[in-house]
Length: 68
Image (cartoon, rainbow, N blue to C red; front, side):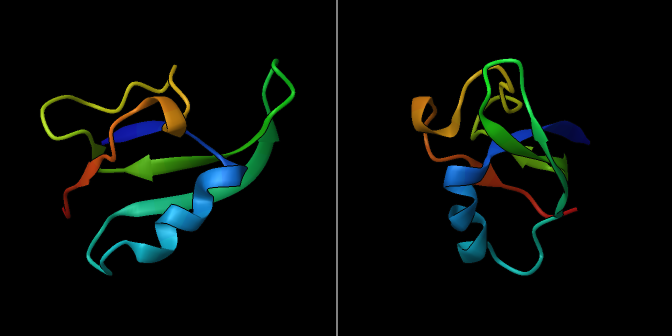
């Protein structure tokens, strides 16, 4: 189970996830850099590695989503 952040500007990507994906958005929070983000928990993994929560989505490959 991963826990991390998703930039609010990119959360529209979540609308295209299959219904079996276990990503649960919680409360918006503001990080030290001032960007609002949503917390999530779920099986949000890159194809070969866990999501690096230090990278914004625009700096990552499109992640693969594994249902649990």
